[in-house]
Length: 521
Image (cartoon, rainbow, N blue to C red; front, side, top):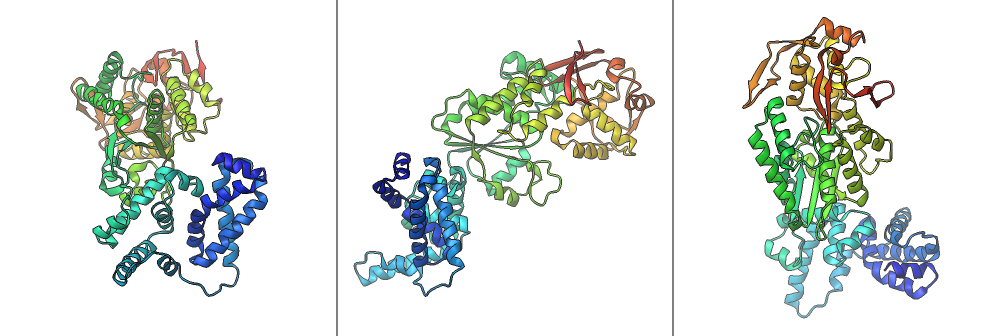
């Protein structure tokens, strides 16, 4: 068809006639959806083809024809709506009269069935109606409809699934099957990968169908390696997570193997959808999965991405877990196919994030990262967690002391206030409890925790964010004033992605004024 359109651009009338035959029914459906008038819809389409023929030489790329022509049809419809309307014949009557009939009984049954179907379809939303008309009645493929409507194939599948579900309520099942013998079942053979159990549970409440894989990881905390599945790397990470935030080592290892096994079998799915958010917690997870999928051969599988950083009506969007099942339903199906650009950028981000040299990530962030629009801010905040050149504090410790100086002392309120200010980190309570505990330790603590409790884990302890009182120490105030350096006085032994930050004079620091990583030695 691209060659046919190219020939039409060069003035080949026969080629344009082929285009007319290909797109007439599709254009009629779009026009009728706008005009609700069969004869006017036909007139609009005829005038649209005339306009397209006169101006097709202005079309720069043949592949843009479907969307270009649809815009012409819609524009023509708007022109007609401004004109005086003429008496018309309802579309349903024309559709019925066009049907071949054999006897009175058959005519009666067929008309009753058509009436029920058309009435049920008319109750659907505009997006669902046009999808049903084009796919089930006109026989266009999903790819053809996608190109014409400029809607992704996964979104069309979701619309058709929703339409069938609604029609099942309105029509007897037997009639529905007889009319739509090949209805798309909707989301069968689908795998949804999400960032947490809370989101997964909501999706299971009728928002999506198919399998759901919860990716359980906290990549912003502890040592992270390019290939975390290596036994040595997994054991090192499992030990660190257990000792720092109380994640049982054996459970982490078993869980990691289980989710990796599901990934290894991903070729059995026709569609895979990644559900993620704007923060570092999710962006690091997304980078890993894109890196992994980028190394696989999946000829029969389509990868899709749904990644958001806001939702209408929510002033401070923290994540998908905030949304109700109804709200999640409104974005379900809006995912788009993952392109080569996303796979390559995701892989580059993961490689740089897990590198022992943070300058690699900084250099990558200085390039065009628009393929993953939330990555820039998320990974820049990751770098800002390195000890600063000003006083040795990372962005979380600095923000915590700032909030404390403003008069907030309850650990719960502190977590909420700091979490709101640094929502781009996606920091959980276990992570923040660990940071508070570290700030209260050493020969020169920044804070004092009054009434704090530690929850014992198998091989260590982690702080529970009960409602304890947090008080800034005199040393903490000196650090905030830039008179002392926290790391120089206490030393540090922490991981930032693939970087092991160690000693009283660590090799890497964050320059707050320049907003960049600098090498100290």
